[in-house]
Amino acid sequence: MALTRELIVTYGTYIISTATGRCLDGKVQVDRSWETGRVEFSFFIETCATAAAFATAVSTAETAFRKPYQTLTIAQSGSTLQSVSQANAIDPIPTITKREDVGDTGLSRRYTVVIEFGLPATTGAETHVGLRELSINVSYDEARIRTVTISGTVTANGGTGARDQYDNIIDAIETAAFAAGELNITAANRELVGEPTVNSDTNDKLCEFTREWVELIHSQAGSSNDDAGIVRQRYSVTRRREWPGDSPTVPERLATIDLSYEAWVDSEVSTNLKAKYESIRTWLVTQMSTVADNKPVHITSKVFRPYHDENRFTVEMTGVAEIGTGTMLEQRVTIDDDDLKGTEIVEAWSGSPFAAYDYPGPRVYVRTVTQTFKFKGHITEQEALGKAAIYVGKAKTRFPGGAGGGGKWVIIRERPSATPITLGSKEDGSKELMFTEASVTVQMRYIEPPSSGGSSARPGSQQFRENIISNRPSGAFTG
Image (cartoon, rainbow, N blue to C red; front, side, top):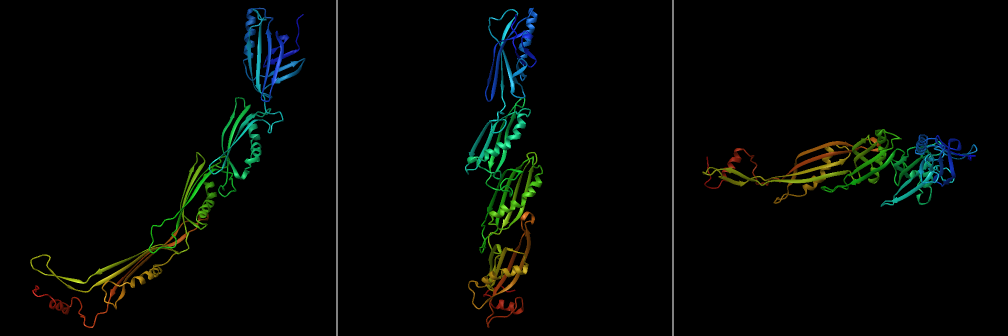
């Protein structure tokens, strides 16, 4: 009488039992660890009446145990002892092996089957359901700012795939990680800058992930410190001062403030780059003012460049700020003397084209004072003329070389001009700067009253011509 075994092994639709003519041989071996499991058993194909039936049975067995991901059930007397499926395990993979055995005949064969599978991280001992492994790497840059890389593997949880389980637990994983030890970085002082790896396997049973966080030590667009929409903010503000030369020196020229800004915008928060830029413009101007000793910054140019395919934008701003306290912003004073020496020339005819007589005549000495300047506020040309008065007064204190004394300077021309300018915009906390570009030219001539014996003949008069003739050297040409 044949032995009937109560143990039945089913893999997919392939059943190993006495009733099917596929008899288990020996014991079923089961191994389980935290991550993996393994089942091994052997069975005979027998009760085949013909070679054709035997060949069919061999093909059916080997085909059945080539299929991956099938459900394995081991039952005894109707009760399930082992069940391995995609619902409670990870990707069962079978291997069927035929070795030499005394039970092998022309119409029988002994096979050994090994089925290996992964196990989900759902024992209850895990810190987070589904988290199989976790790695946290902390690196420091030159400024000791931390970059934190969090990586690991998440398994499926019952009917929840590994990718969904990762989404369910990643926030809790990172919250716990950042609350520990040297990694104590509050949510307001860190930002997620990249998620380079979130890989799910074929059946969504394993999900490998990597996320990168950067510590924030400075405000993002006025937030303290993380702005929900801004990622990898980078900006710099420069304060530029120039001394091209003033005459006389002004207390302090305007400083030039330049800002360069770049940021990505989280596309899950917004794709409206212009709106995001407009929401932070006031903050950008404030950063420029900070570099300018908290003085108002007068914006002279703005450049906004959106990169819609990257959801990134850049900003460039330039402005000026009054670092000093004076009202004169720039100036240059030039003194120019024009000295017509007073030698009169009268041509003569002696056969040479250069023939001429020279004799003393009136000396004409004209001094020109020119002031060009930028003055804070709007002023008229007459007010600009008043600004030059001090330099005109100083110019009058210096007399021409060889002056006889008792003379004076007489102003013969004044030419003031003023161009009122309003610089900058009133947007985003910026202010307008009102100043005037002015130029003043004053000409004066030095004169001395005639002595009592001097001639009062007007140039061009008959008396003036007679004086010239009477004072000619002997032998002068007359005509």
